[in-house]
Amino acid sequence: MKRLLITFIVTIVLGVGLYFLVTIFTDKNEEEIPVNKEETIEKEEFDISNWTAISIEDLLEVLQNNEEVIIFVGNKDDENTKKVSTTLGNTENIDSLNIYYLEKDENINENTTYKNLLATYPDLSNYMNFTPVILVFRENTLIGGLPGGVEEKSLVQFFEYTEVFQ
Image 1 (cartoon, rainbow, N blue to C red):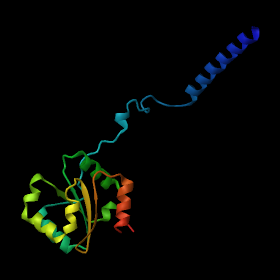
Image 2 (image 1 turned 30 degrees about the vertical axis):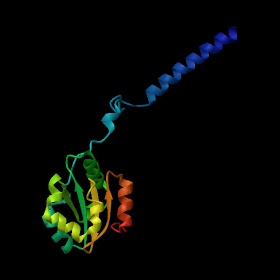
Image 3 (image 1 turned 180 degrees about the vertical axis):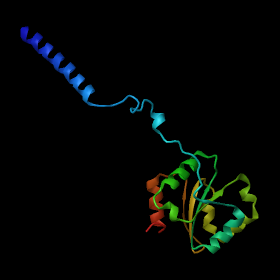
């Protein structure tokens, strides 16, 4: 019984001693430790400051006059558009690309310029039903599109597939 009591006391003393040593030698402030997970998540905000906003009427001219064009079609109030714009803005080497932003409104289907655009690029109708979508045009030809909310890894793979990033 004496051994059990001595073992118990030694264990308690060692545990308390280790606790004090760890708290003294580790310099962690309570302010640095995130208390709430929501505070650590970055807020996605809609930011197209690095890109050129374009209207549907000017789109055909831009496609014909530029060798390579990337068009980001979205709706600024949509959460997925905010997420993709943040992801696209944070992607490496994105500043060197020719990116345009097209705001997709509800009346776009009635626009005659939009109908002409679909007639010129028939594969475009596969992507324009989605918001957001990233379209890549090269030499006035639609290379491909990436619809919906995407992660940065998928975005980089898409740009490598369409040979935007080489």
